Length: 354
Image (cartoon, helix red, strand yellow):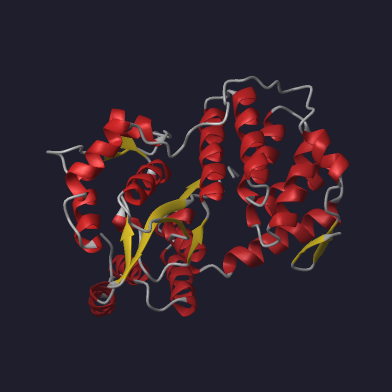
């Protein structure tokens, strides 16, 4: 999956040594270059400062300044930045091409907002869409980043995809340094998909140098080593991902695959079981499995899975919408309508952002 001692639930693993970590970046399979010299992720030029000043500067109140800056950046008649998940760009590049993914837009907005005296910070959000795609049995993990602006009136959220955000989702403020590390991870993931392995290696190395506590960088490094046939370095990378974040089902699962191929079946079974236990505690994982069962017309399995998801989190309208679909497929119209009504009530009670 793209993304002392450490322990996962019920599994003990030895953390990599400093020597092993250094050895990872001496790979004979992957060569580095100067292509990914440290980027100016949030740098503003004079044109960008003038733009922010023109639209937000005239207003004394921070709430109004925030609203005007958001409006200027995303309105089609003004700058009109559009969402593009492939647009992994610096702030200057976003301003020029008017496209951005969530992290790149956040980088531009944080920089401009601070330039206008607004307290803006990066925020990482655990969205249900982290588990939204199952491809050949693999669940694809997504990271979502937006902006939080704490004002006297309360926290304001700036997000190009507000449909992916709810205030009830687990979220955490992250540093500029961590945001930059995630930016390099995005560059690496893009190069991985394009099979530019040396460029992906360089980007991951830089991301890890900036913030070695970002587990997804280590997981994706393991994935990269697996792609070039270096299972020993892949194993060390996944062990380090688990040292950073023990409850990391992606790293558990990929490490289990390595141990299974090595013939260490007992350890592989333990890791597979730990990964599944952890995922099943996430209601959105059960929701993803229920979606898959529904698409395959296995309505009894879908019903069981979505009811379990609701048991874990009973205030999520997405779950009741899927439950309504399952009841409709089973011909249970009364229960379908009750589920839709419940979804509507919960959706009405949710907040939003800017």
